Length: 297
Image (tube, rainbow, N blue to C red; front, side, top):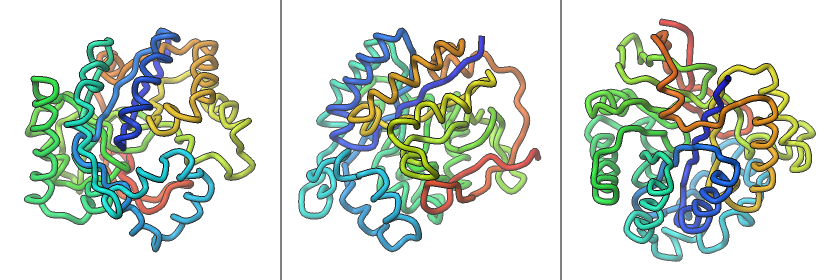
């Protein structure tokens, strides 16, 4: 049976407080597994306004109705409103996810800070940011983390080295086609990488004739051939107003014969992995460059 691994990126305080419990309930209803990657520090979503000057940012905002999904309070956190500390306020929710039988991992400490800065920061900055997340995870769960999924698929060489040094079992920091061992400019990083293989809803909706009504069918066409996949959903989207779309996807994937698994379950079924270079490239529907699976190395 082919596997389709589900990973939930939890970016905001609202997504943790409202979207995560809703997703736990619907996943249990469909007897599906998933991995929740949590943002563990302050919610500074309002500071993303600085991205307004990036090419394509305003187009994405208009396509995906950011205000509708995130709410006005979230869009003011870190600017006109103080930033709630997600890990301190929502620790019980996070522990409840694991108690419900789901895997938990690190998304980041400060989502905006990591996504907007890590690509050009040095080793000291990167270690400090990652250590903040690791320490907070230990406070919440009582044990070290074993997996990381990068905010906005933003990475640098130093972060990859640290995740190997910290003995993470795997990471999902890139976009690609299949699992691999990453290399960065020929440097091998001995930590398996399980890339997101499918586009996200916010990359597809209102582009090239794709609407809320047909986006599920569009994605199901991409999985019809029956090979393993990793799908990334967001607590703020699929855990909110786009939950009916996510239910259509789960129904469709189960009809296609997929087992809906966590990232850890997906990892357990893998053998020896090829080496591939990690490159920073653009993809359709998302602004800026992302960490991508390149050619074999």
